[in-house]
Image 1 (cartoon, rainbow, N blue to C red):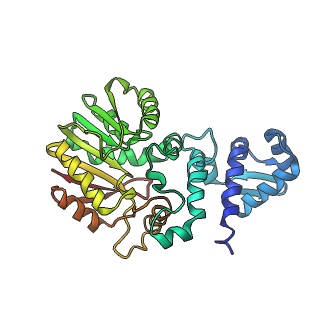
Image 2 (image 1 turned 135 degrees about the horizontal axis):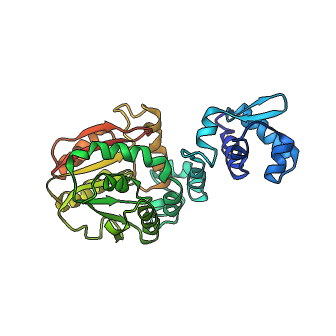
Image 3 (image 1 turned 30 degrees about the vertical axis):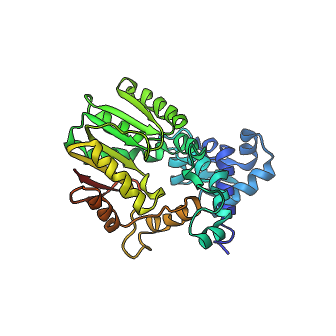
Length: 323
């Protein structure tokens, strides 16, 4: 029953975020009447929603007063530097939810059934939502990847599927002499540009718009970043892209793949293992690949031995290999 009715939990937390309940509670406990006045909603609606959010663990209740839990105070209060509530606009977007409405058909055909190319279609609008919403959530992991690549002292970095740009921005901040090339669809790159400008990096940013499999990448890169990109494609297409990346790197240059990487049993760890279902629903041939599969892809593309590293505050790991 909890699984079948899980959509109610999704709807409740989204409603709480959209009504700013968590932000209104940041200054201390309030009654449903006081919250309703702050939110511009009737007491009855706020009371029922807050009771549900209390049962679900997002609020606490003492008498008639509601308060934030520790996690809600950190992640759901808009004034918190770790605010992550914006990700509901991507994760609960109609584009993704519609794909899961067709999951039975996707299982029958082995890939996205709601549209011919799913979310890998040219300039799919879901990636604008992703770029706008998911950057803050990726920032700690991006800093962790920059730590792992600190020894490379890169002068030229390519960020593939750059999106919000956090991965490339974190690396470029560490190396003031570096040039950052961001590759993505043209509309998405406007978000990359905005975030790079906010980080003071716009003068060192070059935008490369188009399909990563088709657009010329250039050459002489010290590092090529491929964050959350390869899982959208078949293993054969991953090798095809990695060969292209290999050719674009200078000798000794590195590729850094960031991915959900399940164990060989494909059911652990849970966050990485269950990500395959997202790929089944939303892409024609994507998957969550194991480390052994990435090792094979990289070897076929001409790279040396691969090493995987955990990343902070993330279900992702980094898989790094050199030319």
